[in-house]
Image 1 (cartoon, rainbow, N blue to C red):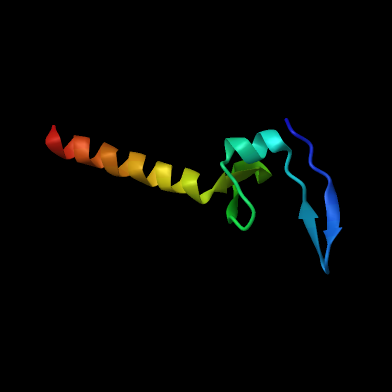
Image 2: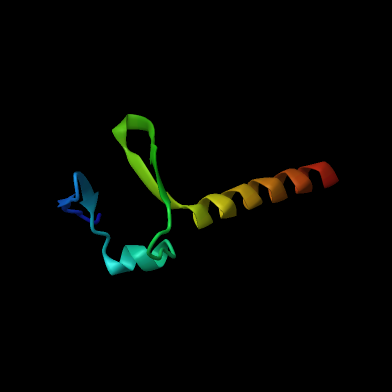
Length: 68
């Protein structure tokens, strides 16, 4: 588990992501990320690239089901 520190950023709050996480999510300055609420009060952090990959995998799965 990675612990993040909440910091003041302008008039709001922000998080500084460790370089390892930045690299895993393929993030760069100005990119958007999503924070999704999961069951039991957990959250999942994803990049738009991750969401696109998930959508492609779902589409490919449906395509294979139709071939069967």
